[in-house]
Length: 434
Image 1 (cartoon, one colour):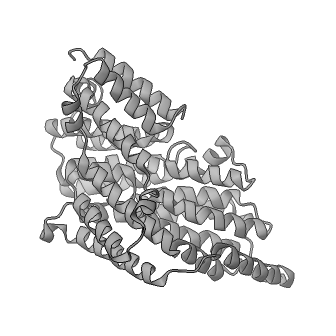
Image 2 (tube, rainbow, N blue to C red):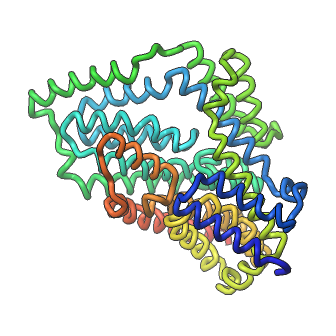
Image 3 (tube, rainbow, N blue to C red):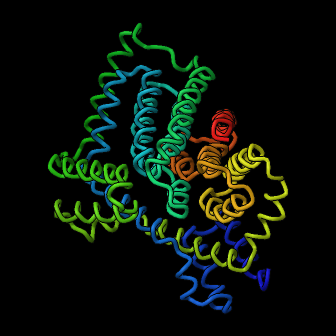
């Protein structure tokens, strides 16, 4: 590890700042990069070569498509329709909103999903005299589970797919089963643990009448601006086109990043939106955060730090494929629960590559272990995933205070259950292919 001390110190400092949210994540990552550039640890051209532009393009394209759909009123309309379907039934609120959250999180950014779902679910449950806390926690947890199912559902998957070259179909085919099972079991656990809070209200006419008034109030509040049906139609058509191109990647030869930006630019063109205004909707800080992390980890890899970690920690577990797969899964799951899973995933990719060199486990199972661990592990604590932090923050704005331990009391058990489900799935999968 030649001249690696300074990059290690800078990386650990950035990681600590990100974990404890002392400053903006993008600022922390880019400040770390600038320090290394200023001290001539690396030159700017080499640093730029470490950025995975495939990941940046995929994020940028999907953010742009989501921004258009948000402007069309699609998410507000969908949320209100789901609220009406529940008819005020506590159990229906849990189940129907969870299904919508899981599906949206699989195809859109899960932070965007909770930004839309959480306000309306708080309005609905608080208005009925229910405790919104369990509903808020459930949607944050479900968004992380649902986002695990596809290449574009969660940042760790986007990073793994882009850096490793795994297709949209590969993620869907290999991860959909453990995600569905985890969704059903996790939702069942939430219901069973809080079943006294999901009692039906259809025996109380006064409550039924008040719910109808509440639903009308929600309809007026959340649909206060007209739905742009033309823009909505074009947005959904382009989202469908993007997914179709992802699915047919084997035939069309287009990478997911190219597809996302291509479709986003087509959508900008046919909707004739104010491009400058729409670009303000893009999470530029997230994109810069990714770019900075890619550079920091690239420098560590160039200095031999990653190889040292792999050989002295992960490769010491031996060459038993079952042990290797379960170690990656559980280490990823536990670490991602307390530290940001994005830098952890970026750091783990070269380590997993070195592990595969010593024991080439077939069918990319080690990558699926990393994806399941990083995504499911984000549910362990309130700070484990961005969707958790956003959900709790929005609840606080609505005077619903959820403490760190209140969140963890519900989410930690679900995390352990989903990691156990993933363990069984990966063990059986590995047994079948060996």
